[in-house]
View 1 (cartoon, helix red, strand yellow):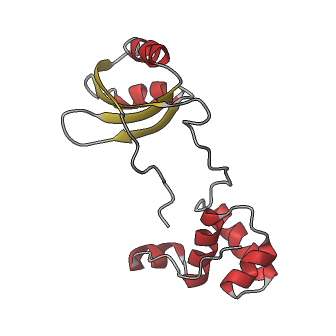
View 2 (cartoon, one colour):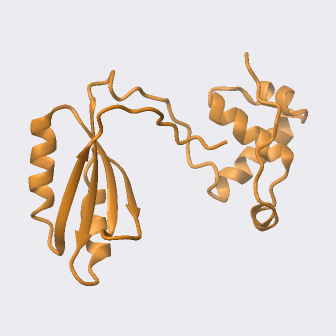
View 3 (cartoon, helix red, strand yellow):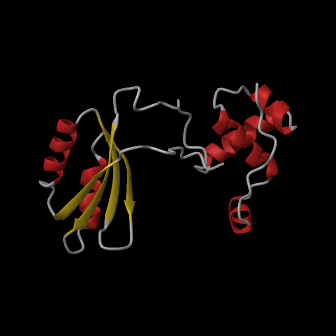
Length: 164
């Protein structure tokens, strides 16, 4: 079993605002490494009692820092080998309507408000080109969507949203 023993380096303003300490950071880092760790295993890794670890986890869940526990899936092996990054421009001030409409699609992994020539960047995964094509055509029917530019990812060098 591999335990993480070096805390995450949160900026001081985040620590003050959310009342994090090195032990909270170690708990989060270990859970991100393996969310199946028991409270006992975590307590051994961070040097706190099991009860203390459980209460810290509950607090982190309550304030929304820990949002859930998930399996890490290889999307390509699961059949979603086509990744697209789609630039979206919205009409006038109707960005929130466009965002809300796009967020309902299951294969959309991320939607980002961005600066620059477009309003949004979408990251989405598909099983085939025809599925991507149908998605793009469906997007064009969203009210207040002005235009899209689609980029097909050729190779994924790194994809890991665990920052800690």
